[in-house]
Image 1: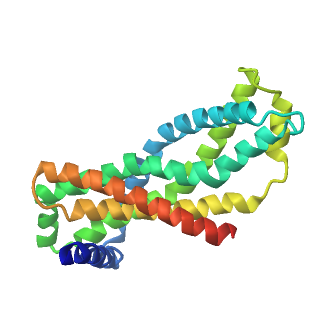
Image 2 (image 1 turned 180 degrees about the horizontal axis):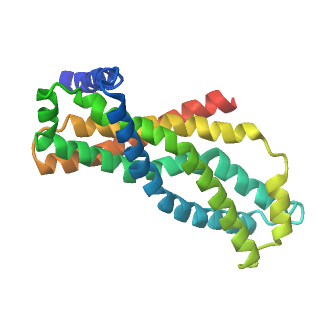
Length: 251
């Protein structure tokens, strides 16, 4: 029982110590900037495809489901477009999309750093006098946090286009009514809420995944377990922080 209580506390302590090393001043800014650009491409640009694909079809499905389930003579027809917009803005494109990215991006970060740990590449960096935590982790955190607002924007746009396509080509409803719902009572603050939440989620994904990869002990099997653990822990923390941030930003 005592071990079960102390282990989470020890994990949090190690995570905070690692983050302290991560955000120390870089030795050579040119090298860090090059790594930062590479991470933006690897973690952000390479994720655009899956973000657009998933968001497009989710937007289409949301439109169909809302149209079928709230259709009523007492309900204005533009409600479908309004509800689709609110779901994409407030929850899917920020929270659910980051949960999906935690599986793609988080596992990638954990396995990459974990492989470097078990192959002793991190030890080699330490021997050369390089702060391996800062060199490996900080560009990933900065790169993902830089790209996540763009991914959220792409997700929102793709979801709305998916809803439009179901109206135009699927004949679910009149596209003009859908467009009216999109424009009804638009609040710019909702977009900023999505960006703010996504920045927190991006930090969680990158830092937690990097921690599990950096602290791997063992061989290739341990790397696989660390990758799985990072996805699970990132997802739990995203859901918890989503609850807290939604209450703070929307309350």
